[in-house]
Amino acid sequence: MALNIGLLKIRGKESTTLTFVTISWAILQVKFLISGIKLGSLGVQQLITAAEFGAATALILGIWLTREWKAKSDEKKENIDGMARD
Image (cartoon, rainbow, N blue to C red):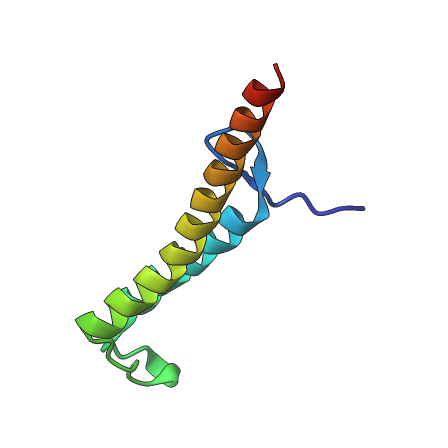
């Protein structure tokens, strides 16, 4: 039994990368929101500076944006190659 967790890209294709990027981004948001808060037996959560948050967000979103850019470049290349054959 396969687990289908892929989100759809704008082009309508399933994207496992987008799913993992979305999950990672959501976890980062929650971690940023609870930083500095005392959580009972878990203690006080470590603070995240704006620089650390920005770097982590840029890294996570950069993975997805790079993949989308590459896919779009490949798509353009296929279109150009198809036009050259016609």
